[in-house]
Length: 129
Image (cartoon, rainbow, N blue to C red):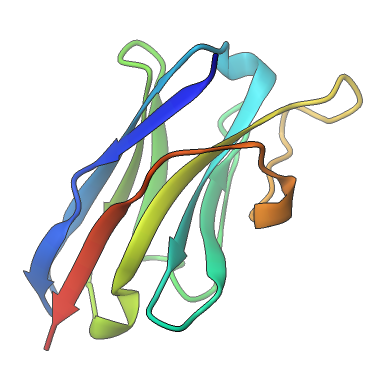
């Protein structure tokens, strides 16, 4: 059974940094792609970054250059390094996993929430001005 557990959220001031972690278990990374999403107050769920099974990454324009997604295969943990935080980054952050079909290239990943099957419970990030 695939399980995802996020941690690392907190309250920071504008300009600060956080490193979110998502402990993953129950699957083989090469068969999946993974992503981070966020949902701010009264906003829809936004895919901020994804990582493919070959390590390729994609980012939303709103976070490009500030967020870095990475995967530690030994620790079986997905990370999201967040720098230059602003109040607009406030929200609940979720990690998600999707099993890659045999027809999906290893370099492919998605930031669309509808593509994902498994979600963590989320970790809250609050940025004050």
